[in-house]
Image 1 (cartoon, one colour):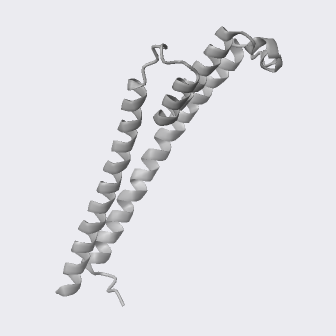
Image 2: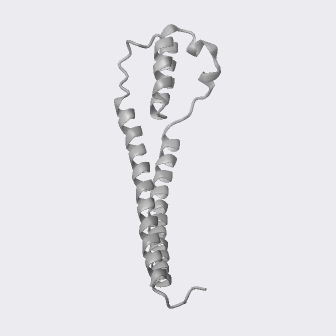
Image 3: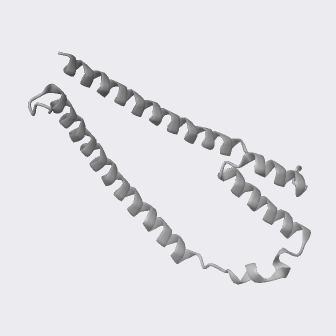
Length: 141
């Protein structure tokens, strides 16, 4: 049984308190950000009328220029999603090799997101190791 006055329990309570504070700060900033994003979305809805009728008419995508534009939009979507290999195949099969769409900004964004994920995993691992080392030294004494 763990002694209620042990240093390990005090460290655990301190870590728990710190985690609660961090979650509260994150929650507050998320609320603020969500509120701002929601306001922007409502403003866009008020100022732009959506015309979905044009997407159901075949003649809208009948010409070569319209098909090329549609393929460009799909290609950009794949870039944004980080599916760069798939976008290369689409560009080749659709004959979009001459289009000057740069995938570099999307590569940087996707690599940046991956870097952040790796850093957060390393930080979690370091915290666990530090806690376990501190916990095991208390039990040894």
